[in-house]
Image 1 (spheres, rainbow, N blue to C red):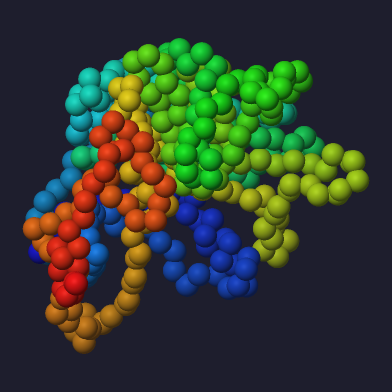
Image 2 (image 1 turned 90 degrees about the vertical axis):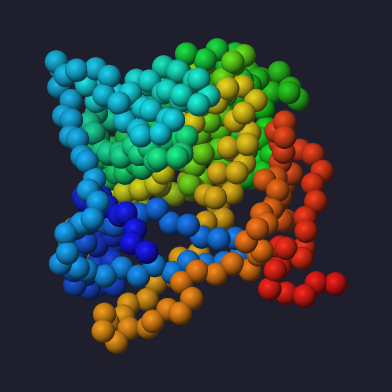
Length: 364
């Protein structure tokens, strides 16, 4: 079966891998990737699917339409991105997202996404790619930040901020080691009277899975692909710290946070590349996405690759396999060896048919 696929131009940040390969192995890569191949896959439960990628001289049997926009001061507003229920609206004059629209959940929200910094810094040190996938109701943001400039001798912390008009009343929620979400209140501690001396650092917490805030009508959720710092310094706004560089404070530990990678006489500060995922839901509906998609982020499918000759390569007799009965699927809220779910429909008792779950095995 032929698949619809798309060539994507590899952004300049991918050159980092070539640089780091040279730094750690002493050898430059023999070839440099210019494109990546993207396509939608299906993998059955308790199973696998095999895809064979080969070149052909035949023309594509399906084409992908592309549209390019360059933001200018006089550019048009309302550039719409997205083919499904979710649409991101971008400002043509600023090149930034300005609105989040979900036709299924009837959510239309003002959203502003920006990068900022703490301490002395002036300039641009990163880039991002935002993606909206068909049949998905969240946005994926891939960021590349670094190297952080050090010429001024001042440590810097690079953050991204998602701003909405939600009235969150100083309250936000952050996961505890990827498990339950705990309520946090800005400038407040439940066990003692807090004297606020550090209004920013004193409200930062580790984010391992996600962070969200809400008001009476909607919820803003962010999930992350790695542990970062997070907070809500302003009502209606979530903030993630993506990268930082700190000089030694001169207090005796001599542990400056200033890693570099060296190739010959070329010294560069570290550059980080990662993703976070954004979604806005009606109040009460965000828990399902945070837990279900959080499982996909932290328990991804296992990928395996092999290279073969087109003429003498292996002929895969079984291209797809599932250990379960094809007519059966687990209830949506069923997870093995993971924390309990939260949500209106996901916190009730359920049952599992083991005979259908292990269709190829004899159960007693």
